[in-house]
Length: 545
Image (cartoon, rainbow, N blue to C red):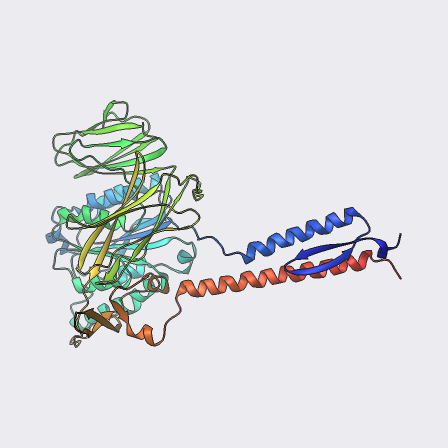
């Protein structure tokens, strides 16, 4: 039977009709299978990709000042218990390292993956801190702990926590100190900015060089705080840690000194401020009493001069209660089957600017929850300043994308606390974050030789019943990398004049354009391969005339 007598089948692929004759249904099925496979490839690369999963992987480097002046600002060496608690709360699987610095930096705990061995080593090593140095070389410390391209390529969020009570002090020569400070704020800090790393600075006492610490934090979108005395160190360290890692907490009932443990918790870490009580005890979910001397096989108890840190594997569900007349239950961190992936758009904004929070939920295998699994889950955000609530909102989670909570534009500068909660019935997980709002400052002539952040002209409009008044102001452009520059979604009353004249292309726009380009390129290539394959098959099976 001649090939021309065989009925022709019509196959439509990528909008192109190709009419092919076949000698048998078997050959038709082969070609149809190849066509379907290539069609799936084309559709896969042509369709918009779902929102990328947020990352909770961290790389944290802690720098502790041990210059001689710390003997006065921290006479009781409260840095030691604060650092011990901090290291016990860094999530396992993260990367971390600790340096002390004065005249020069020295490694206390080598940088590596955080596990039980690393945490035990950190608890012991923290006790070796002593204030014997003469100078305070912050720049050398940042160089020693700096990140490189390999660190950046691992996809971890990069953070530094720096504690100091002084200023850049490398010599008795004032001019040399000024050069060192300039190098710190320009060359050294720029390396952190290029890596997208955040530097969180803690000043111990107001004798610290606040302006330098503020600049370091603000220009890398990190947290800055001053501890008036060493007693505040732990609370500030914990806030810095909260702004660094995603630490899920369960609510603590302060009056009862108790908390609830649900099924699915793999391990939890309890922090207790002892307040002189060396015999702290607990009742677990089965109302069994245990203490430091009566721990069970699944419990680890680390004790410092001021705090106890208790880690419990697979804790018994139920109500847990602290037994003590003076001790205080500070927090309970949990890790379990539910993962919360969170990204805060910015930790530093100007008055009138907006920020937002993106949240995703995943299971213990890091697979995002489906629409069915998200049923009943709500995202709740409460913002307060000094204990006064200024914002509260709740919304349901959205499947297959990041759930975004837009925060309000704030007209008062200062530090705001964010309590981010994931709620589903009795299941409550909270994450604490901070947001610092900076004032818009008027133009001032720079009278010092210290480098300042690059400044851009900003127009602020205030409307009235009769007319609109426009005032020209200057806002420091302290945002660092392109990733950080693309974070602000909306400005309520502030418009950057430079952006009006020539809008800049954001990182997300560039990535989207490149992504679309490659999808269409691969799709077109797949379609061309399919066309050539079908032509070759037709020629192969075509009968000679």
